[in-house]
Length: 418
Ligand code: C5P
Image (cartoon, rainbow, N blue to C red; front, side, top):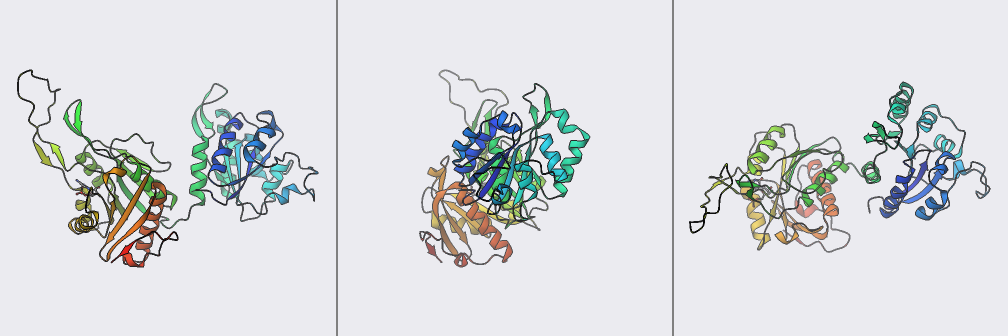
């Protein structure tokens, strides 16, 4: 769970976006966090403490003078063992209070009284004119200078009927930003290029050849790399997945387009992870018009030509990034995996145990390097992506040590063969 063990004080201030924070509470507790809700009086006009108590499973505090707190110092007690305070929604007024260190209610007082290890995040939510007001902009700059992280706002339709900057980020987006903020940063400052998904090779304007890759593994790796602190560019074939937050995605269709997109951005990248299931061949005699069925006549004859091998091309560049290949084999993965790694001349190749993992949320990976191979236990693709990213970070830091030096997984189901 992405926020396992984290203790978060969730502060609600007055705004219509309070309704979204009910969902945010569910997402945060679902991700393993303990959520302690504190509300301003104004927030209670938009959502009741009863709802927030039911969703967080904890007593909700509003009043500075709450006799339920034994020493009557809720503003101190509530943050001493917290990891973070998240103000969502953060109203114009509350942003102003944060900027000026005001302490005229429980929530503003506990923000000022927080110890330095308690991180403070604020998700502004306000009308576009209120957000653009010079005083608000000044306050936003000030709180950022003071080390408070602003999450959003986003642009779009607003509850007041106007449109523009000031919408609170969606609950899932807020959760993603918090998960990213708490993640370890083994790839801080690194530039990583990833390919993902299938390619689509046209036969005519309405038909084509593709494969069953869903893009899930490549997208999970892009997300994990961003969480680990990398600047991530994702070159993606056609998939039904949203771009991971904070990742620059370039959409392509064909293998040639994927090759061209990769070559246009590869300079300066420190790691290249080729997860895409790239078509080996394209149709050489693709038709510019839709092919017609001709009754009683012969079926179309397709001719194929070789696509460029993107991974091998990048690996052969004079200043090649650290290259990681992927291989999905339906049989003899161990034999084919090592041979493929050598053929592509890459230091690390990751094998999937069969194309049957295409489209699934789980996978099992085998890592091949010059010293042998090691199996990463079957698991959720996101968890495996994170393990792989940690492993790549370790190799970059230690100038590619041998697979045999990977510490044994705690669960003891990793199989090691040199
Ligand atoms: O050659 P094969 O497709 O089995 O190799 C798989 C690996 O090579 C994957 O990392 C895939 O992304 C990459 N590849 C590529 N360009 C191709 C074919 C495969 O980058 N044309």
